[in-house]
Image 1 (cartoon, rainbow, N blue to C red):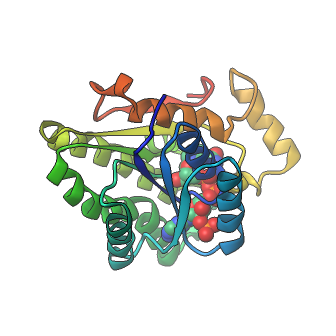
Image 2: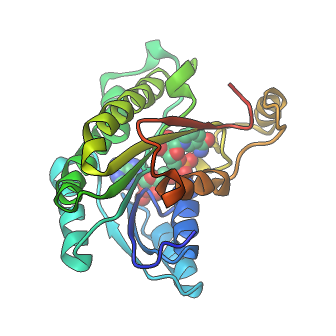
Length: 246
Ligand code: NDP
């Protein structure tokens, strides 16, 4: 895969899956913009890792759940590079707990980050992609968006919404040369799952036919494929990468 001269934005690119996606695109020659919300240290570590490999990378801090912040992130990229070729909507949060114990703020923050955040970034990025009639959008969803997870009702709803958003926007933008697809990972070994005990992790692993959690790289490889010329006739799809879990 060769992404020389391409500009890629990875929201939530400072840690976990986003970090692996940024690295994979960087290894293929792209210029990388990572966005994050608050953890400056993680963003700095990721930038250093990318730069050590000779990858051109910058970080833009900002909460994508806020429309104007998302607008500023895209404007900063256009000002600096004059374009945005590939957008990976990866930033996301989760909260585990019984539905009955969830309060309105929990629900709002998950929906506002995982679903409205994708609208906020896409709405501003698509404006520029439409001008050049070219672009790739890849949304990082979750298997729970398809099958639903107990104790993750808001999260499942946000990712289910993201899947429908992907299918609809892909159809609308197809005539304009822009593809929109989603990847729905299974369980990936990141900080998002740090709340699981050793025994709980083992129980989960026992349910996965490939008998292991996924790695960020498993998702990053799929993202790079969807952004490549090899995937030019693929749009509006939600692709599962879960070791056979669902
Ligand atoms: P992590 O918790 O490891 O990293 C989350 C990243 O998103 C961080 O960079 C964080 O920045 C950023 N972020 C969170 N909220 C915002 C916000 N409002 N604005 C900007 N950036 C934000 O998550 P993962 O790598 O595990 O998950 C990445 C994506 O993959 C998520 O969408 C998640 O739902 C999805 N996913 C993960 C799975 C897993 O098992 N890990 C499985 C299926 C899907 P900061 O550190 O500064 O807060």
